[in-house]
Image 1 (cartoon, rainbow, N blue to C red):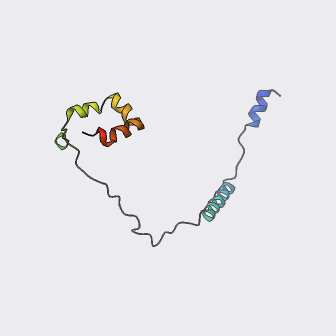
Image 2: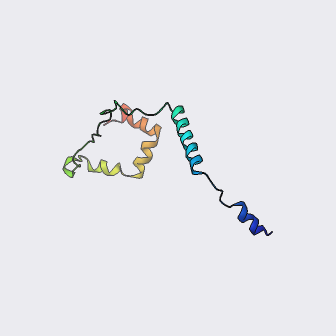
Image 3: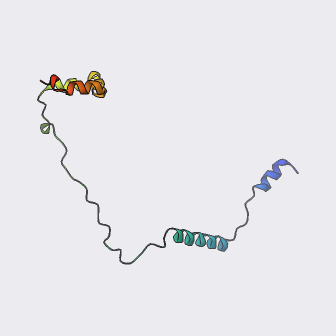
Length: 101
């Protein structure tokens, strides 16, 4: 016997009984239902979950946003502002009353 023949026979499909397979599936389903707390109720559940109500708003327009200080807005988009905003000591120093205009 060649090793090739042995491998073929080792992986040959086994004959299965469809009735036995169905019984095993049913038994597993009942076990899952028992462990999970039973079969879900089918009566008395009408209207318990309503349709989702989504928030519907108009898109923001350019006229909705006004920039009073363009220089400040430009500064806020720089790497320096990013680094300062993450530096706790710098934030604390700039927030102190002595640094306010």
